[in-house]
Image (cartoon, rainbow, N blue to C red):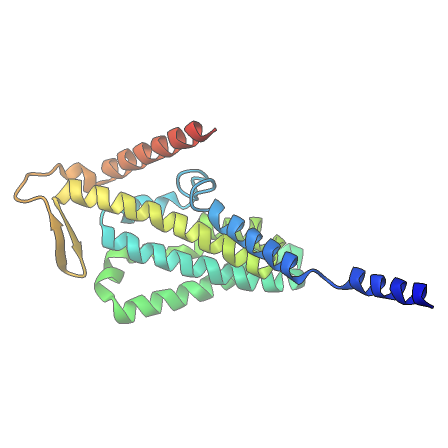
Length: 227
């Protein structure tokens, strides 16, 4: 009888899930998916997707802030919805459905910016509506969110979005300070180099390609040194 009781207790212990271990694995997985988008799979400098909008709007730091936040919002919430309904989406029409979901969140961003930050909205122009067809957004929907769980997909979207935003901020700062000699945020000059004649090429498209090329070279050099 004592042997049967001991055996029963061992069986109960065996079937009790290790909640702490499962939670730790989840946190580790979420952090891994989030972190990869910052550097290792940076959408601009490594995956090289979403370049058109990045090169176009990064002539000003303020543009980079709002474009990055808009893209990150759309990435996180479109990934969340697509992952949640992925098993119910027919394979043959998945891309149109992804685009409709993405377009819904882009509309939220578009109308919000138009209502509350009109000057920034007018500067960003067509690039906000074009987030719908930004290959960075669609690539994460097709390549990741449609194949993974909701939390992982949200972490992936947040990491990719912040990686994209980070590059926009760096490019925006470099191009604005070298092209105009000052940084303006919310109609206030927060930093200036004084009355200098700065090379306007940095706020034009050649400056965008030059700045992007230097950043990509620096990142590749950094990653090579870590190997």
